[in-house]
Image 1 (spheres, one colour):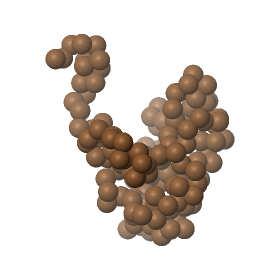
Image 2: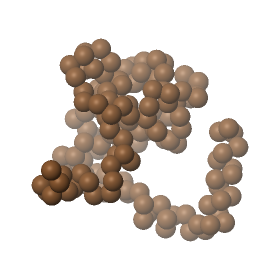
Image 3: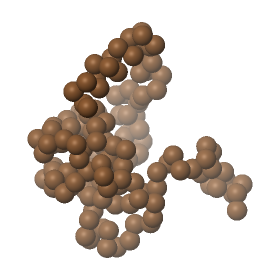
Length: 152
């Protein structure tokens, strides 16, 4: 349960990664790096503050997670589009309340993990659950090789 998870993870981090700041700086973008990407025209999407499964949270907790991350992204730079990707993805990770919260917070669209192309009905009927492929389903480098013309 989430009430025990944070404390347990904190203990594991202290034991195996005592210099958490160094570890984070090696694996995550800094605010300046995100700002640089925004200024270069890249689309930056929101996720949540703590990467929790939203469907397990109350409406108030979901809104707190979503709004906090939208505010974080806004503090880095203005974006042309307000987008969102559900942590872990899949229909089990969010619910109708989640989609309503995103609508109320002016989210242009959100991505769900569902391996198929977006069609016009998705855009008109359910823009807060657009399909996208899970990047974990591709072998390392496969996208690069396809783009480079190395794979048929």
